Image (cartoon, rainbow, N blue to C red; front, side):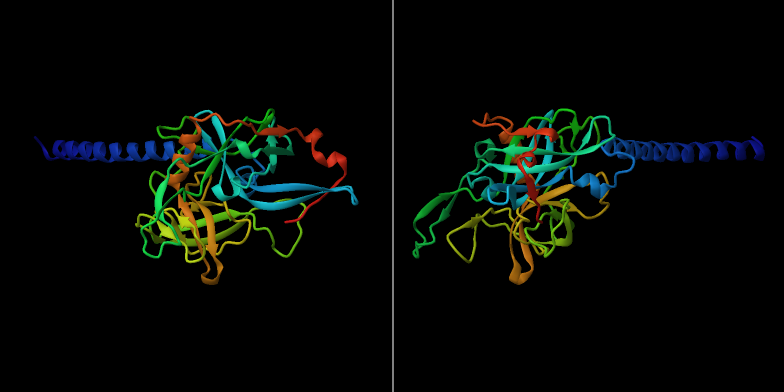
Length: 331
């Protein structure tokens, strides 16, 4: 075999290897960009990721009516977010907020199915719509100095309410798919985060010192600072307990941040990944506590098997309570 023939065979072999490698990269990039496009389908061309986030992360409110001023007064109570599991829609927040026994209201700037308009629709969630995490853990009573008196508690601070889908409007729920998602990547992390994972928290603090006519989630950045591994954790104040999987995150939270989703900071795009939910905080240390994503998934899966005695309902734009008078808006 001549030199040219050997050279030709060598070039063909090398080209074949590089060609196969290039083909694999092209396939990977194609799958990546297709999933990005699928994940962006719920966003209009003129809508930013931050604007679309307001159809994912929402403010929970309690509403009272001022007869003297003929106006509604909306008091911010906390934060929640939408998750799609199989074909069902869920609203997720913290257990200590859902357990207050009140009707919570949500205003969502939802996109019409035509994609032409963004209308403010309202959701009303009765107290009996919520399903809490099913686990019970045995902790020790705060009054038992000899630490022999057990008390059964449920410290997992997660609740979920199954919702009807709003007619003629689109939301932007996070996708939770134990198997493959048909319309994009799974957005609930496969495993709980560990320190020092970078995070982003989006929520609605009750007070910022300003009044806004349009609700906007406030973003804060931090890291997962500590992951506990004890049977249960007792707070230093009061007879209350935290989930053993509770995370300590280096993010300062304010009143109203309870229920805020915790996202992975790295590559925060339309493929955003949920890592947990804010449960409370210790402002003197600029630290917050968060339930990990595993607890969120367990709660949604449990709620999917339950039949709550009350159902949430959507109020179309033309039937908003603001028809009774002007609405006093505050952040």
